[in-house]
Length: 311
Image (cartoon, rainbow, N blue to C red; front, side, top):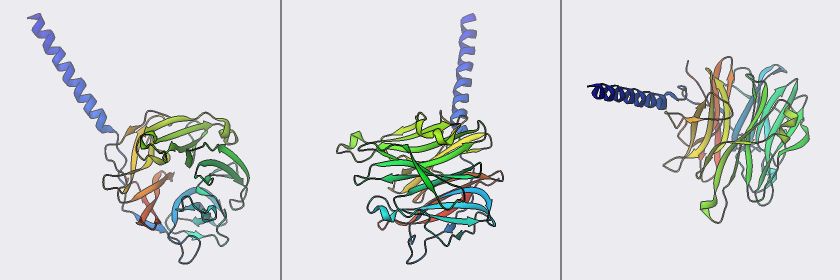
């Protein structure tokens, strides 16, 4: 009789554990987002025509604009002169006005990402050599327009990529975090290719160049273009990937810790229709995603869209 009772309680315990594990696996999800809207396109015949690709936003409150955005182009490889960065400004995160002096970075600048700290703008972006190996550099500016004092933050490695930077100031621990893509994607043996999402932190943004990098995710398939945001008590990580229909998609991950233990969300993909290069930000307690939508993949033409979390 005692053995039967013992087995009964063990069975109940196993059922409870399995149920809890199943529930836990379903907990992680990215918040519901709104319908997308186009917010930025390149001008016909101009330097950015059909190539607007990424948008990094800071709350600057300068020169009559609350938000300053820094956008990069879709040109990858080839002529460094085609990789440039421009400035746009807005008061509502929807309607953006281009700076008359664009481009503000005139060459070999891909994936600009900016943070404002102590009245100084810090811009990070990727540079490439002839072999298409990439590195990440940092520039600074007092007016948000004229950037200088270049510092190499993540050095170039032969045959590897160090690119797609996203700079983030974490108010929870008052550290700066640089998350980026590191990997091998051009190996003669495809089995040697690997995509890593890495992160490094520093109390002092000028010391990020000497900080240790930690791997958040690693994949044998495309996994790049990371961004991080803290919203509703959780950290959300977004990356770009290739979907089943060979289209660009955006995948989400969730964690209680900014630098580890990310769990894939149950409602992936977060964005699915040739949508990639997501930069996410929280403004006025609302989570926004600024991302690139491909309008012609063979021509590598893109436009910038935005969605926001529905409360």
